Amino acid sequence: MATNGNNTRDAADTEERRIVVSRSGRPMATDVSVLIAAYPDQVDEANEAADACMTWFDEVDARLSRFRPESELSQLNRSGGAWFEASPVLYGAVEAAIHAASASDGLFDPTLLPQLEALGYDRDFALIARRDIATDIDGGAQIARGGPTEAARPRPAWTPPAQAWRAVELDPDGLRIRLPEGARLDLGGIAKGWAADLAFTTCCEPFPGALVNVGGDLRASGGPQAHEAWSVGMRSPRAEAGAPEPGAPEWAATIRLSRGALATSGAARRWWRDGGAIRHHLLDPRTGLPLPIWTGADVGAASAPDGRPSRVIAMVTALAPTAERAEVAAKLALLRGYPQAARAVEAAWERYGAIGPDDDLDAGVALIVTFSDGAIELSANARVWLATWGTADARVPVLVSPAGVEALPPLPNQEEE
Image 1: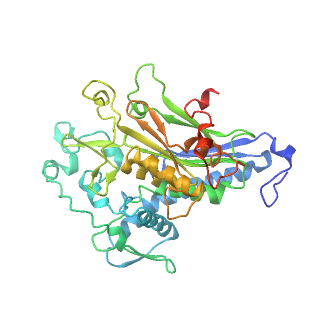
Image 2: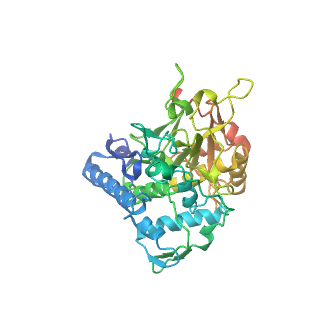
Image 3: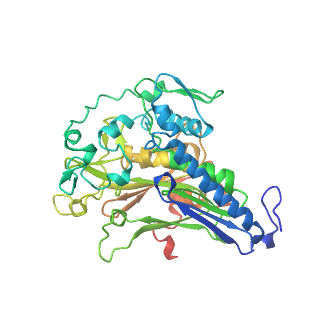
């Protein structure tokens, strides 16, 4: 029983039991999983597609890792001032990053690698996670940054952002890239979503359901069975930080979607100390410093002077048509803070509805903001996004009225329906 050219079947066929093929691993230094729901006669094809996805992620890791000196990205970063002939993988990822920088006027900046390294993130995160890189002790010997001498070396001073991304030159005909002298790229803020989208569009579209998840940045279609959506859990901040409160739920909410993408950004796990100062990987390009968000480094200290839980942002989940857009949108939301970030995507929804121009990174985006005390705030268009963009076969609106949002059921209780 085969599909036709439009990947459709007779109505009776669509009720056929689906078989879910899965793959998982840790390419790109993160948890990666691929789920493909296939009809029985598609299982062999689905296995090939799932394997192709994992092969793709291995290639992305090999080419784009900044921690591998032999990677193509590392070679590009050593070529400042000269044209570099890139593979389609590197060129595509860099092009996406520069587009995001331009569309956000530099609020998303892939050229902050020198400052990120100066703050201590100069090796694989597993080697620095939740440790003090300036005073790390192993058997009584200081080992951070190669030894006491290097650890004691003062950090380079941060100078006002030069927005080096503006001087990056791209040659689409020759797939060439030229970085300005001294500029180096970190693609960690966009590569996961970008790679998930390409795996999804090139390998998964022939099947009635698929979910590609790269470290929490995911793209979905259909569901595991007919009339079912994929369920995606949002962990509570303290569970994410590895310090859940006794009796508290592990999941802050569960989202069901059968179309579109989401990405979550935060630092509840990805932090370290530098001489006692808490650092994390999400930098503000306006200051060169880590964003003032909750890290979970001192779980019991996240409270205001009067003892009440603090309203510090712990993480942002962005809902968007693509994983690339969602990953960038989540980081922009952390940079803007709440409620400014919600207002920005709400305004874009009012301008365009669910579909807008590529150069407006707020178009088609909704936000779910989780605070350190576990409270959740939604942008006004979040529920209607899930009922339109996030639902297969639903009509994607050109314009949506505020009244349409209020008529939809509350998000956090979806799993209890």
